[in-house]
Length: 329
Image 1 (tube, rainbow, N blue to C red):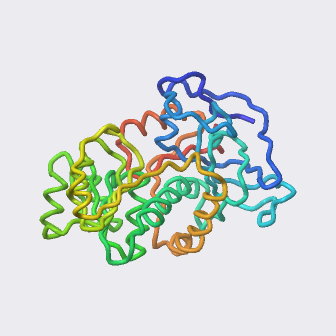
Image 2 (image 1 turned 90 degrees about the horizontal axis):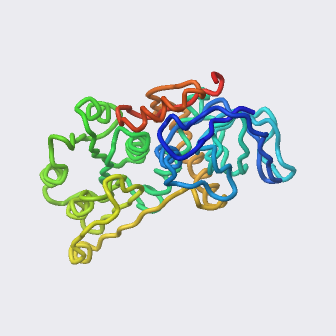
């Protein structure tokens, strides 16, 4: 098969097409003929040598989400059959013509979505469900603040939270991105380059703050997040783009009874990811099938142009997801 491999740690140019043997698959796994693969920031980190793949995946083939057709199944697979169209969360190896996946991490493609749209779903929707709904326990009537609202994660979080009856505020870096976030359900989008989100939200909430914050920024956002949270608020960290070392007022954490948590998804076991998949299928997939939640795909690149896709990802000029088309290598 053809695969996009990381030839050495470095810039986008280190992504090259190479021949690789078909992946093996265990008794509880399926082999998927990949039609499309989503591009995510962890792929960029892996390319740079900062986010090594788990031992059980291909060390030089990135890619955490795919959509395609099942070509073969393990002897212990009970739900899926050859020919089924699925999207799936994988731990690596997604930038390839074929990828093996534990059956529990596969989901049916919802509604009439195509492979490109379906490939844009798993990484972001799994991440948002696990962090905002499981760890953050967001409930109807509460307020959620999402930093990076126009990112793939942000776009998913806005729509999922709104579908569950929460009010969503976001930050984004341009007026265009802010207006887009509002068009898909955000109550207000704050341009962090021209406004202070802490000041704006203190005014909007009359000093009460927000209940949950999903943060991929870290750094100097952290003390501002803590001051922005309501009593019993929950701060959830999923990245530290502005730095991991911060100074916070712990007395404020105690007085407001705050919870600060975070997670990474890639190294979690199949059982954990399969539980998320079941919840997504039950609670979120009907919204995708009906069109109430829509995939937002900013750009599609032929798989052989993965370097260009990574260049766009690092520019942060996109709104929504970037996808590789494996029908065009």
